Length: 260
Image (tube, rainbow, N blue to C red):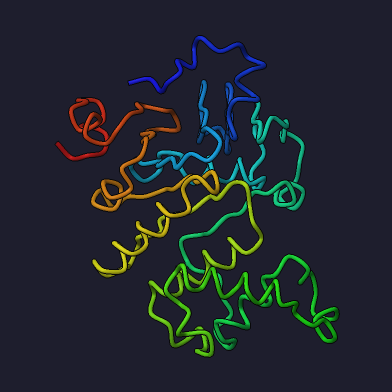
């Protein structure tokens, strides 16, 4: 179940440049426990990749490595062809890597619009915002994103009064506002209603092609809706890759995760 073109036929240098994210012999060890042990993994530019696997499979550690929160014990990871082995999370974020955690990070006491205003790339601290005036272009950009995620009618609503799904969309919107090249999205369907799950899948599919997106998810129905290439992880390793329906026929995957 290899991706196309065959990764084994690409030279090492080309691999680093052909993929938005490329890991090679990437190992993370915590107190003697090998949390990540990836021989090779590549995610194409503007691809929507889904990562699945049981608890403890190494999915979050993988995102921690890509976002700079956790350093590799050994091996290499490249983002946009740049070795980020020694880069910190702030530096990596500046390279266009954005991350949305499972619990939406929004400011409850602020309105949807105020959250978005605060997330504008120029909003680095409180003091510049005391006299900064939002431009018409920035207003239009916020309005367009909120329209896209179905929050245009909630601009004056405080975030605390949004549904869980709406909070997820707001958190994603705040991330998108910074125009990241790579989006790391952790369990976006967790705690959502069926309708919210459907809308969230539609949102990610609309973003596909505009950003490289890596989604960590457990909800198989949500994964099915995304209809994208899937990487299955288990015990820190890449167990298999392919379309979901193909993976359902894989006995190793079924035993490790899909419950068959």
